[in-house]
Length: 407
Ligand code: SF4
Image (cartoon, rainbow, N blue to C red; front, side):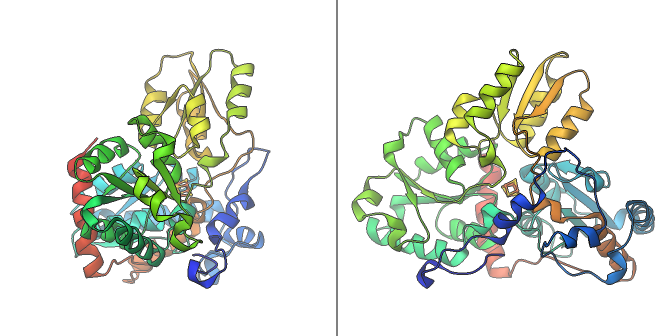
């Protein structure tokens, strides 16, 4: 999912997922689902499907999906991430953020088929946590995550070797990866005494890691890493950013030795859109507004906001707030719109006046959902996500540590 080029190749790689992000930004607030053929006309490069699915109208897709669900019964469950468009989330048996959905995947042992309406790293995690006989299906294999695509497994492995060589022993540094990373990176953490964390338990994971080593190598979101380290009292001068496009991450051995936290230079193209200026503007137009943002936002935006927390925290906080309160939210627009619809007694709006859905979640179009469900009806498992056994073994170690850390 990357335009290619490892740091050794000399070129700078920008994930296609990042380039596509702006393709869906608009100002009229209309996120209606078009036919897949219309979506393709905007120049996106999504997975090819049989021609029949290109022209189906929203009504035809809806009727087909409902019929397939009925025919498949308990054999198939659909998991839907909160950032999915309404025309997909409405079919989900369970909704959640990546952490909640991964726990559900681990608990749902009955269904033979888990159709994961999320992005690739989430489907990989579900495959790792479900029973071997269960099939995890990602409706559109092009649904990646621009942040996860910023950390190529080979580059991370090289970086880990470089850092370990400078520090003279792996006990010195604990690798921690955010859930939004490939299974191979999770496995590297599992093999080397590290763990996976989520935005719900990043602080607990940092404390866990500092109990085991004097430094943390955090991947792939520099903002979540920086925000969490600051929360725990680590100062900016004790952090270094590893640039994967430069030799030794662009750091000197001395900078590596001095750093308590080494942050991979990755970011979320959705959450870094929120700015201090937008927050000030929201306060000007709504003087009593509460500003809540996701910790993948920049430190400046996070420090300007009133509250911050994971996607589930945002859902809970806003849903449980008193009637009449106002909320300016810094997270993905489909979730913000849904919260506004489900909480008509509150004023809820997105901090960013430009409507920018997560472009990769957006790739799960209802036509893909119908395609994989009809495949199952015909006895075909389309788009099964399978993590190789050796990667799975080490990744599960890191994921089990995450589940034990809790939070
Ligand atoms: S919102 Fe950001 S981190 Fe989440 S899936 Fe989209 S690009 Fe990835």
